[in-house]
Length: 513
Image (cartoon, rainbow, N blue to C red; front, side):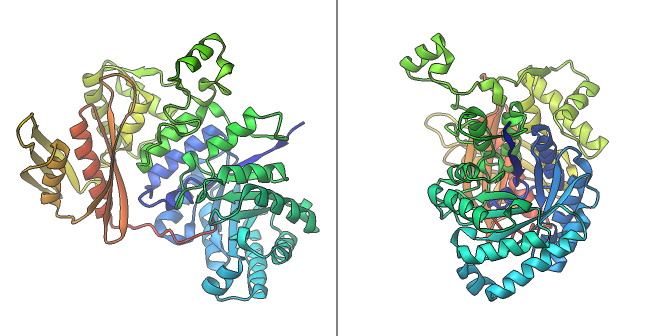
């Protein structure tokens, strides 16, 4: 019988540390519900001490989730642990994850603490966490560059203090797979009470080996992997949940463990996270990329047609591809619309928000006739579903562009309670629209990224546009969707402006990851 491999998802905590990937409370709860449908074991909902907004988001998720354990992160100090414990109180099943740096460079240069002080603080933190729950996880930050002898002492002490999970993070993505696997094996052999805790790993992808490191650890006794949907995360990201899960599932002959993940929910989770964060998935991304199950080569096509397993080691439908069935049309009523949103885990915050979303659905259905689940996710991802979030609102636009002439845009926009208009030429129609919007908003933001993706197939598909803006060191992503790509572009730029205008700025310090 295979061991159970615990899937610990940190999309809502470490994933949110990607520049521009911060999420609203409602968006975090939507993703948490999808993670619950995916059947992840543990959802790390956030870092409650970082801000009041993150505290409230973790609290909301703790109330909403019933089938997964909800976890909050805390530095090894009493205030952080207390905030995490208070935020998690509504949870049916909770965990506190506390950490402190353990590598010489971090202890000396960041913490200004001796190893003995770090060990003492770690033990105290586990004790504080035990006041709230028996489910306590401890991480020695930057374990990959820590002294093995000190790691053994630190882990033995924290397990003795009551940590039920000990997590070994490769915080800067420095370790190679053979080294990381050997480290996990050595620690489990050398720590006298190692059998009293679940061993976990959290790997970053700076050198492109986060998944390989995680799998090497699993082969050497780790039974929890910390990962994120789409590999989202700080810098180059984290180990990708979908790659970990499908590697273990596909190579049952190799791995002595199995997950409880409902793999048919993987693509839905990927699309939801991508839509909310504005981070598109590259076409050649394993498992969830648009080309993951596509075959261009004639030889490959011939082989797949004769026998699928000649070139496919997984079935597309097993991870959720091909599940975007037609759900609604222009004759569908409000109740059918609201029911489908609920089935997708989308709970809008008020009747007014439902009315706004339904009106947009009707407009979309009139344009394209066939509305798919992906369309609905894109529709409700727009910030305007909650009118209070919109300081800037697109009223109307007109663009002229033809060969031999300079593109020209006339844009009407609401700025607060004032309606303003701007007209300007541009290098192309999108450039003209962006310049017109910027003239009215006066944000002085720099455009870092402009990306377009089709949400579904067909010439009537919605285009989903991602825009990344930067101002005074703050980076935000905006997204917009429409069957008209120029309108989608305007929506995305305005969505990003609204995020820049938001009063609450999330605090995402460098954490144990």
